[in-house]
Image (tube, rainbow, N blue to C red; front, side, top):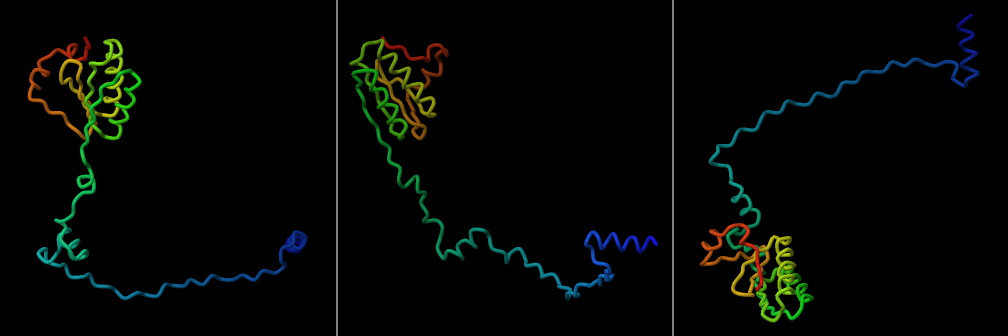
Length: 168
């Protein structure tokens, strides 16, 4: 009786009355032939990375010149600012990788100090270098230009408080 009740429930739900039971046939993958490992080449027969690249390119790699070294040309700008507003010109020159010599002889001491503080801060932010060349004359360079001085020993012997620039 329960089997008949089960058939009626299946019919009501919409399931097929008779389901054929199928056995899933287990299929086995075709056997692949066993491959033998390749014989190991002697170390002397192997090519180095450079030899492989030369074989592929067909030319020697010694004639390649780096793009940066071929195209870069150092440029230096000399500025004698008349007002603090010209500090932006100095910073913009540093940003485009030009070294700048700033002569502050035309500025009042307060404006000169303010300009030097601003440009020194910008130079530091751009990972550049700075050096006092003379009274009121400063050299600022971008990170790709290193400043070497013959009198560098005198800078190394100063206290940290004496390394800040003072105008006047």
